[in-house]
Length: 361
Image (cartoon, rainbow, N blue to C red; front, side, top):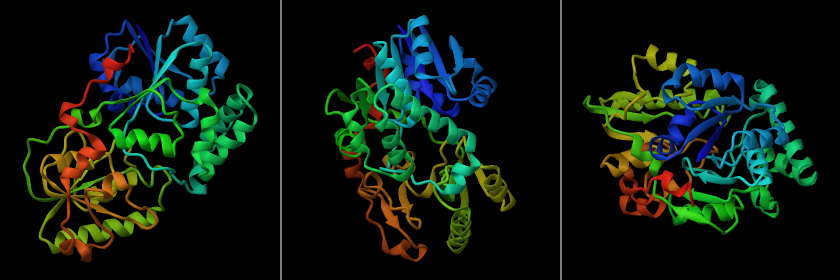
């Protein structure tokens, strides 16, 4: 079987498709990325994966994607999101009869609001996405172009997209029954072929052998890098976090993110704060927001505190079991972590079914 993995960011190929890479019985695995920059990043950092080819499909029309799928005899296309670029690949695949499998890759929120500065700073990416939306409209109905912009830029009701059946995958692999319902009600996915696979996202992580006793771990998220929050808000939070740790006579260790911005790397290093990237620091407790990693610590017996930032409500899939605070003064008054609830949202990640086993269905 020839498989095509599609992603926007090169770092996500190994992060979210590792189960496919490790276990899929594929004759050839192709990778499609959305820009030459991402292709270069991939080749510089992940060349050991030795895929059949890594293709820059940025600015490709749906017609050109169709031709690529046919000429390479692609039999499965795998996506891990439902953004405008993913929808374009789904439409092309359906047009030529190639089955699309969608893999849930993390904890989702209904809409990720971006600042206007984010769109201006990434003007070429913005124009590229606009082109994709127009191309999708030309291949379905022109009204869908306006609908896609309304949904993905202004936060319109995503369920309005459900009238366009060719926008959706043939099958969807999700963490639990909760996420099956969530995709139907929030993303408008058709109530068809869903498979509950647990949380394979978490199987690849392991704790560091180094002891972090006496530490507080902070789980970094790319909120500023993704245009979701103003840098000043995060700077204020980090100042409060450092002050809180000092008041508790604790050291701070940061679980870094692959796309962590250089200014925040410098900030933590200037404050002599350790940043760990490849493994998970097992600290006395963890403070974060709504990262995919939060359940990993909790399942392994660590207390998890989710700090709610201004205009960033903690989603139910975290707030339903973690200890939620919005002020460090509330820290000692809150101790209501409910690990039993986690299976409702994530199943048992240790016993998660391999994604690869569902690709031939």
